[in-house]
Image (cartoon, rainbow, N blue to C red):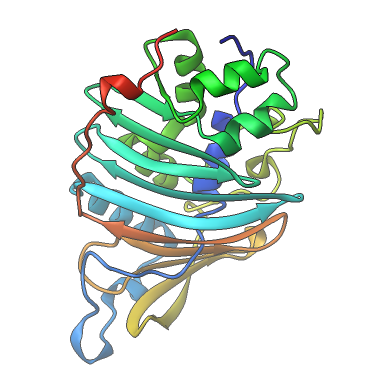
Amino acid sequence: MSRTTSLITATTLALAVSAGNAAGSSHHASPSAPGGAAPNAGLSGAQMQSAFKAAVAKGTAVHVKGAFKQTGQTYSLDVNLNKNGQAQGEVIQNGAVLPVKKVDGITYVQLTPSFLKQDAAVDPSLTPDVIKMVQNKWVSSQTTAGKTLASSFGDLTDYNAFTSMLAGGGATATPSTPASGSGTPMASPTSSSGIQLDNLTAAGTASVNGQTMAVYKNAAMGTTAYFAASGPAYLEKLTTSGVETGAADFVWNKPVTVTPPPASEVFTG
C-alpha cells in the first residue's frame, strides 16, 4: 500500500499537544498543600517555567487526554508516554481514529475503518479491496507506510520530546498537510496563537476538582496554565482561547505497560 501523506502530520499533533492541552485535571502528582497554602503560586513566570522543567525531569510518565477545535477541524487525543521510551494511545481527527503503540523503539499504528474511509477520499490507491485487506491491521515504523504514519505522531510518542516542547514554550511549525479531502493545508495554530510557557504571569490560585492550583497566564496568547500548588510543579491543566479552543487533562507518574500487537495483526505487505 503506497501513500505520500498521512492523516495527521507532526505539525498538527504538536498542536494537539500544545494547543489542545487545555482541560480539567483528574489526578495530580502532588496534592495541594494543607490549609490552602500554595507556595508555587508565588513564583515568577520564569521561576515557574524552571520549576516545571525540574519536575518533569524527575517524572516517569505522563497521560494526556483532551479535545479541541481549530478552524473547523476537531481533534482529540488520549496518550500515555513513559519516560523509558514506551507509549500508547490514540488520536482522533474529525472522527477518524488512529491508535498508536511504541515499544522497543518500534512504533505501530492501527489502520482503523474510520481512518481508511477518510483517507480513501484523497488516496485512490485505497480501493475497497485494499481496505478490506488492511483494515484493523497494525503497520510498524519498519515498513514504508508505517514509517510515514509513525512520523506523523511526532512528540506524541516520546516523553522527553513532549515535555521539552511544553517547557520550551510551544512548537515551531509550518502549515500542516491536509487531513481529508479538503485539498487545502490547515494553518498551524502554533504560528498564530501558540502555547507559550515562557511568557507566563502569576495569577493567584484557583480550585480545580477540589484542589488548589497555582494559576499562570499568558494574556497575549489567551493561555491559562494550572500547576500543582505545592511540591513538584507539574502542569495539571492548560486552557487556551483564540484560533483554537479545547481541554485536556494531565496525569503524571503512572507508567503503563505497553506490548506490541500480535504478529497476526501486523500488516507487512
